[in-house]
Image (tube, rainbow, N blue to C red; front, side, top):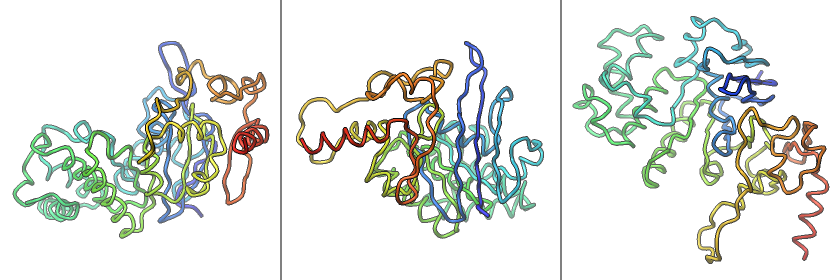
Amino acid sequence: MPLLEVNNLQIGLQTQRGPAQAVRGISFSLERGETLGIVGESGCGKSITVMSLMGLLPSSAKVAGSIKLDGQELVGLPEKKMCEIRGNRIGMIFQEPMTALNPVHTIARQVGEPLRLHRGLTKEQARKEALNLLERVGIPDAASRLDAYPHQFSGGQRQRIGIAMALACGPDLLIADEPTTALDVTIQKQVLDLIQGLVKEMGMALILISHDLGVIASSVKRMLVMYGGSAVESGPTDAVFASRAHPYTRGLFAARPALGAVRAGRLPTIRGSVPELVDMPRGCAFAGRCAHTIDLCQSTKPRETLLPNNHTVRCLRLGEIAASNARAAAA
């Protein structure tokens, strides 16, 4: 049995223009110790998908489908039961550590809180374990900084504190939502290396969200490409990077600057912009922005096509696009 099994997840939100589908039938599974990356533009549904795993959606959100953790259904689980899982069996590193940390509580209190709630540690025991965690994630002179507040730390140190909080109870699943946002490249590498090392050491499953394809390539074994609340392509990271079967995936790769490439004008871009949730096509979410769009794409939702190496793609015109790309490469 997989550690995490998500099947046909659908999330509806209430917007100023009426109800809209933010997630449209996502399915994936994750084994213990496995790593999964989710990539896509802002607004494609990455964060709201993982927020649903934590039970952190707005109260007005309507969730359908299934999310199972070790066989236990999480959709519709009472909040009291969800609190027993959140921060305990599922840990999360949030995108912006300054807003994820409480500015009026000390670091010792915040890192120790999940230990007191889920492990029943006393205040002193939790403080001692918080010190161990801060030292483990590389906070310098941690003993003298236990009673400091978030604003007294740098951005990279705050992210390390967020990692310590997420790992406090030794979760089965760690979710990292853009964990290197607003950090310089040196600190980014340190944070990513820290996460990877701890995940491997503790045998946790990892879901990593990132806009950075380089981060995905070096950090996870499997990946999911999302657009418009749908998974348009998924599979082993090496297979997806090698094939790039979906037009959206190809667009993301084309827009990525190549190290050492001769500068020859502007990078290619995906035409148009991500439509608002209420304006999504009934069929393929990428219809309209895709150069291969036909009328059928607007009205018919593509089924999953299985390629070699357990690589899957959702596109109605997969054969025609592959032939077109082959002709272009041969020209």
